Image 1 (spheres, rainbow, N blue to C red):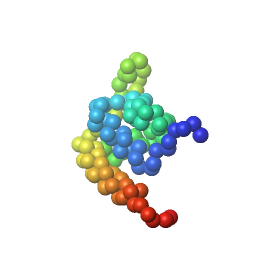
Image 2: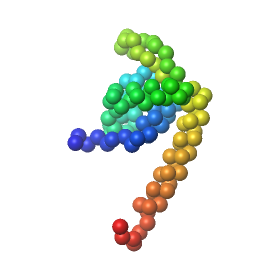
Image 3: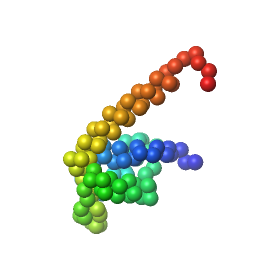
Image 4: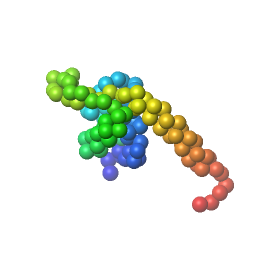
Length: 114
């Protein structure tokens, strides 16, 4: 193991949506690199993991995509957050915060044996 942490199922989509909200339209490599940067390179996002998530988000209408030219002059698909994606991001963020609060309570408990 190289010290990288695996992304929990379902959380990558949330990170993609948040990245697009913060940065605006991005190509897949840009999204992956930003997620890695935000995690201080503790996460490693590969194409085999990212692109199925992007495809699913596009099929659900949470992101739209169009072809363009990347900064290094290559053809790339750029993803943009849609109105539906903004609503999904808000809903998933609330749910994530509630879940982490609940889990935090379990780790904060003292004096109990497992």
